[in-house]
Amino acid sequence: MIKEEVRIDKWLWAVRLFKTRTLAAEACKKGKITIDTVSVKPSRTIRVNDVIQIKKPPITYAFKVLAVTENRMGAKLVPSFMENVTSEEQYAILELSKISGFIDRDKGTGRPTKKDRRSLESFLDTDWTEE
Image 1 (cartoon, rainbow, N blue to C red):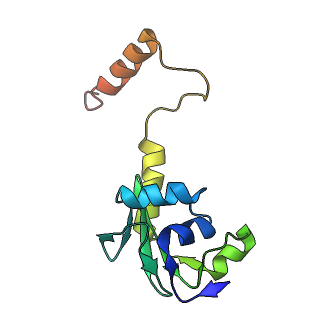
Image 2 (image 1 turned 90 degrees about the horizontal axis):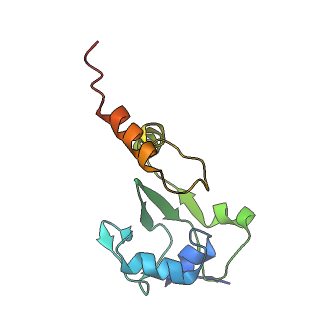
């Protein structure tokens, strides 16, 4: 069912940006969802051509509303309801954070031991300009 306006939490859930409507509502309450640089409440209604920004650190995604719906849809239908208008600068920040981020640990290995922590600290404290 296509309407002229719909609650933002329902739309975010319907276009699969959040796994549950509750998560979408919580993101609104925490100020992670904005329209025109203004934080919105979950009950805020959106219309076609609104641009929604979603803060998911380290970047802010932006999506343009092409159509509104409150019913969850299959992933193949999502492009007809929204357009990703996130700037290239934001994706560059994402790539940079992946490259220069924390040294990767294998998933499931648990927390670092004291020895791991000390070796990591000595690696990070090394002065690379003394060569």
